[in-house]
Each structure stands twice: as C-alpha cells, then as structure tokens.
Amino acid sequence: MKNISKTLSALALAAVLACSAAGCAVGPGKWSYKTADATISAGSWIYRTYESYSDAVSKITEANQDNPDFDSQLMDITKEKVEDKNAVDWIFDDAKDKCISLLTVEKLAKDKKAELDAATLESAESMYSQYYKYSDESVAFYEKLGVSEESFLECNIRYNYLYQQLFNKLYGKDGEKEVSDADVQKYYTENYISYYYLSYSLKTTDDDGNSVDIDAETKEKVTANFNKYRNMLNNDKKTTDDVDEAYKTDFEAESAPSSSSAVPIESLDELTISDDLKKAIKESKEKQATVTTIDDTLYLIYRNSAAELAKTIKYQEDVDEDESYISKDNVVYVMKKDEYDKYLEEEKKKLKYETNDSCIAKYSVERLVKLLKEN
Image (cartoon, rainbow, N blue to C red; front, side, top):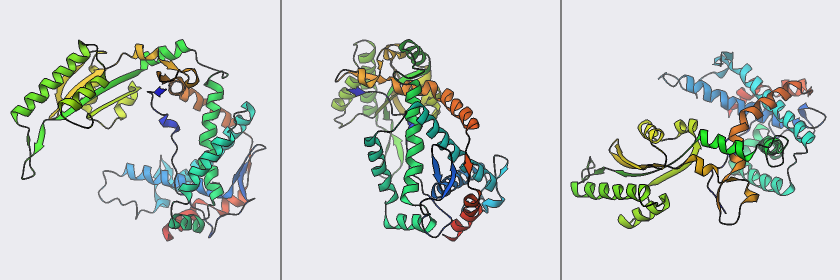
C-alpha cells in the first residue's frame, strides 16, 4: 500500500542533550514529582531543566537577532528575560510544566488503557539508547552532568508516545470521539491544498563563475517542454508522475526537479520556498496546470482536487494492498490537535501530585547554569 500523506510532524520525535547538577548520573529512587500513577526521577527533572534552558536560549537569541553586539555564548542568562519573565524563573516554570504534563498523560493513559505495546517500547528504547551512546564524548558528558540513560529514555519516550496513544484512544478508530468519514472529508476539502511544481532555472554560470541567462535555444526548448507538460495535465488526462517521466526523457535526467505535497493551507506559509511561489500555488486553480516565471526560474504549477483526494482518506488497516490513500489518522490529528491539547491543559490543572522540594532545590536551575558555564 502507498501512503501519500505526510508523517505527523507534530508527533515527530527528536533527541536533545541532557544535563544535571551532579558529578555522576543521579541514582535510582530519587524523585522530583510524582502521583499515584507515575514518578518523575531526579535525573529527568534535570533533563527537563536543561531542555527548558535550551528553549530559553533560543528565545533570547531570536529576540536579539537584530542586535549585532549580542552573543549567546557570552550572555548571562540569569540577567535575561523570556516572555517578560526572569529567564531563570521561566526555565523553572517551563521544566515543571513539562514534568506535570508527563504525569497528566500517564494518568489519563492509565484511565483510558492507552498502553504502549512491548514491541513499540523495545524499538523506542533501542533508538534512544543509540542517541544516548552516540559517542564516548556524549556518554561522558551525560555522566558528568548527571543524567542516566534511564532518565534520558524516560523523558524521550514516555510523553511523546503516550501522547499519541492517548490521542488515538480518544479520536482514532473506535475511539471515544471518533471522527466520521464525512466530517474528515469535509475538513480536508476546505482546509487542505495539494500542490505539485516542476522547476527549471533560466540562469547558468559562465566560465568565469558569473550568473548569466541560459542561451536562447535552451530556453526555447525548456519553455516548449513545460508547455507540453501543461497540456499533458490539462488536456491529455495525464498525471504528475507522467510529467516527471516525460521530463526525465526530454532532459536525459535521472530525476525530475519537482516537488509535491498535501498540507493544510495555513501550513503553506511555513514551506521553505519563495513567497512569490507560495502566492502562485495559492492562486492557481484546481486541476488547471499553469506555466510561469518566478525569479529567473520557470515553473509548472498544478493543484489536485482536494475534494477528490478526500475520498481516498482511510485508516491504514482498511486499505487494500497497493492502494493509494491518505491517512485518516493524520488528518484527524490536524483537525483535533488544538482540542486535544486544550483537554490536556484542563486535566493538568486538576492533577494532584507530590513535590520533592529538597530534590528540586538541590538540582536547581542556578546550579545547572553554573555547570554549563564550567563545561
């Protein structure tokens, strides 16, 4: 089967470095926050403070992007502000919020029986173990600063994976709030844009390394071919795959310089393409290919029918082999993410938890900052 939908980027997982205030990994049994259902280890608290520290540095750096005298390596973060709050206080509050968010998801996952299967856990632990042991230097760094491999895995696996499992229990197939096919198709039709473009630069480099126009003969050939591809789509009922194959033949190329995707319309602005190209894609009509020049590049632009694509939305388990489809899970996630996150925030406010004040004081943000300066 061929899934033509993108992976949930909001659920994409990434490993980050972790630090602690101790000279070796914090031993088992020490905790920072806990409920009747789960416990946040001391090492995980330290990890979260470093994660929030990194977020704070990024925000401060972004706020000073127009300041030529700013150097994030030289700044004293204890004297900086993040979102109108003292940076150290912001880091503490953000790290605490991450910990309580995990405890909230742990409780709800238990209540909803949204558990991770053994195979998923084994695969995730293997992957993040490799991140932890990326090099001798990275292991030494973790051990020196106090985050054990167990804490590293706890932070990188539990929240992200349970967040997804709990979402599926609520909004996925047979979930408490499963979204109907009709509602998903309507949402996709009104909110998604499926685009394709093929490009060819009208500039080249001469023997002296200067940018110059391509010769008239080449430009004429390129323009003629792009007009042919436009007609293939508009008049001959051909597909964008057919266009790519024609391009490879016409230009004796191994691949076609094309790009395609189906994204929420609001996400189009986040793409790393020129604003003029974004504008041209937005303004193009569905199932009507156009050829245009933008910034010395010739483009063939084509939009698929969102309504037609919406009819292919299915759960993976309902798809026949080799059938092209759009993942219903992915579209539902886009539809319901804001509602889901609001639900988690409300549940977090209700959560009853214990705080190990001595542990949190010992592994404070201030000590973390001091260690980072020394490292």
